[in-house]
Length: 113
Image 1 (cartoon, rainbow, N blue to C red):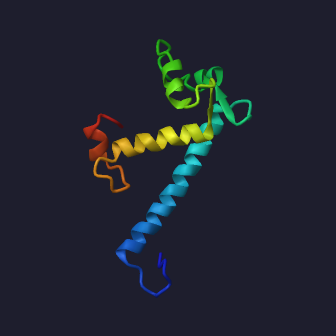
Image 2: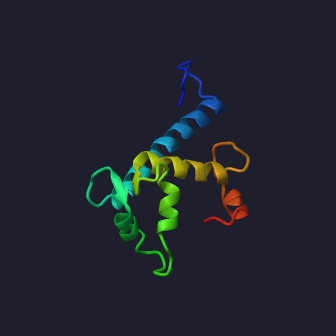
Protein backbone atom coordinates (compact mmCIF):
# COMPACT_ATOMS: atom_id res chain seq x y z
CA UNK A 1 0.00 0.00 0.00
CA UNK A 2 3.06 2.25 0.11
CA UNK A 3 2.44 3.66 -3.35
CA UNK A 4 5.38 6.04 -3.50
CA UNK A 5 7.86 3.53 -2.04
CA UNK A 6 9.09 5.74 0.82
CA UNK A 7 8.60 3.01 3.43
CA UNK A 8 5.50 4.64 4.94
CA UNK A 9 1.86 3.98 4.08
CA UNK A 10 -0.16 7.14 4.58
CA UNK A 11 -3.93 7.28 4.91
CA UNK A 12 -4.12 8.76 1.40
CA UNK A 13 -2.05 5.87 0.02
CA UNK A 14 -4.22 3.28 1.76
CA UNK A 15 -7.36 4.97 0.43
CA UNK A 16 -5.89 5.11 -3.09
CA UNK A 17 -4.93 1.45 -2.88
CA UNK A 18 -8.40 0.46 -1.68
CA UNK A 19 -10.04 2.49 -4.47
CA UNK A 20 -7.79 0.74 -7.01
CA UNK A 21 -8.70 -2.70 -5.63
CA UNK A 22 -12.40 -1.84 -5.55
CA UNK A 23 -12.26 -0.43 -9.08
CA UNK A 24 -10.69 -3.63 -10.40
CA UNK A 25 -13.23 -5.75 -8.50
CA UNK A 26 -16.12 -3.64 -9.85
CA UNK A 27 -14.86 -3.98 -13.42
CA UNK A 28 -14.53 -7.75 -13.00
CA UNK A 29 -18.05 -7.96 -11.57
CA UNK A 30 -19.45 -5.92 -14.46
CA UNK A 31 -17.71 -8.20 -16.99
CA UNK A 32 -19.07 -11.29 -15.22
CA UNK A 33 -22.61 -9.86 -15.04
CA UNK A 34 -22.45 -8.86 -18.71
CA UNK A 35 -21.15 -12.32 -19.70
CA UNK A 36 -24.16 -13.91 -17.98
CA UNK A 37 -26.47 -11.81 -20.14
CA UNK A 38 -24.50 -12.33 -23.39
CA UNK A 39 -25.68 -15.89 -24.06
CA UNK A 40 -24.29 -16.14 -27.59
CA UNK A 41 -20.94 -14.59 -26.57
CA UNK A 42 -20.92 -12.06 -29.40
CA UNK A 43 -20.03 -9.12 -27.14
CA UNK A 44 -23.53 -7.66 -27.29
CA UNK A 45 -26.76 -8.29 -25.40
CA UNK A 46 -29.92 -8.41 -27.50
CA UNK A 47 -33.42 -7.82 -26.15
CA UNK A 48 -34.11 -11.61 -26.03
CA UNK A 49 -30.86 -12.17 -24.09
CA UNK A 50 -31.67 -9.29 -21.75
CA UNK A 51 -35.16 -10.67 -21.24
CA UNK A 52 -33.80 -14.16 -20.41
CA UNK A 53 -31.19 -12.61 -18.11
CA UNK A 54 -33.93 -10.70 -16.34
CA UNK A 55 -35.94 -13.89 -15.69
CA UNK A 56 -35.89 -13.35 -11.93
CA UNK A 57 -37.82 -10.10 -12.34
CA UNK A 58 -41.63 -10.11 -12.13
CA UNK A 59 -43.16 -11.40 -15.38
CA UNK A 60 -45.33 -8.29 -15.67
CA UNK A 61 -42.25 -6.05 -15.87
CA UNK A 62 -41.42 -4.86 -19.38
CA UNK A 63 -37.62 -5.11 -19.67
CA UNK A 64 -37.51 -3.18 -22.95
CA UNK A 65 -37.55 0.08 -20.91
CA UNK A 66 -34.47 -0.72 -18.83
CA UNK A 67 -32.78 -2.12 -21.91
CA UNK A 68 -33.39 1.09 -23.83
CA UNK A 69 -31.65 3.01 -21.04
CA UNK A 70 -28.60 0.75 -21.40
CA UNK A 71 -28.62 0.87 -25.21
CA UNK A 72 -26.98 4.28 -25.65
CA UNK A 73 -26.72 4.15 -29.45
CA UNK A 74 -30.23 2.63 -29.83
CA UNK A 75 -29.08 -0.26 -32.04
CA UNK A 76 -31.13 -2.81 -30.11
CA UNK A 77 -28.06 -4.29 -28.41
CA UNK A 78 -26.09 -3.51 -25.27
CA UNK A 79 -22.29 -3.59 -25.36
CA UNK A 80 -20.05 -3.95 -22.31
CA UNK A 81 -19.10 -0.28 -22.69
CA UNK A 82 -22.77 0.77 -22.63
CA UNK A 83 -23.36 -1.48 -19.61
CA UNK A 84 -20.39 0.03 -17.74
CA UNK A 85 -21.42 3.61 -18.56
CA UNK A 86 -24.86 3.13 -17.04
CA UNK A 87 -23.64 1.22 -13.98
CA UNK A 88 -21.02 3.89 -13.27
CA UNK A 89 -23.62 6.63 -13.77
CA UNK A 90 -25.83 4.82 -11.26
CA UNK A 91 -22.91 4.66 -8.82
CA UNK A 92 -22.30 8.39 -9.26
CA UNK A 93 -26.00 9.05 -8.59
CA UNK A 94 -25.83 7.04 -5.35
CA UNK A 95 -22.54 8.60 -4.16
CA UNK A 96 -24.21 11.65 -2.61
CA UNK A 97 -21.09 13.17 -1.07
CA UNK A 98 -18.94 12.34 -4.14
CA UNK A 99 -16.19 10.67 -2.11
CA UNK A 100 -16.00 7.62 -4.39
CA UNK A 101 -17.72 5.36 -1.87
CA UNK A 102 -21.40 4.43 -1.64
CA UNK A 103 -22.45 3.77 1.93
CA UNK A 104 -25.57 2.11 3.31
CA UNK A 105 -26.75 5.54 4.44
CA UNK A 106 -26.45 6.90 0.88
CA UNK A 107 -28.24 3.88 -0.57
CA UNK A 108 -31.00 4.22 2.04
CA UNK A 109 -31.37 7.93 1.32
CA UNK A 110 -32.19 7.14 -2.29
CA UNK A 111 -34.23 4.02 -1.56
CA UNK A 112 -31.66 1.58 -2.99
CA UNK A 113 -30.41 -1.68 -1.59
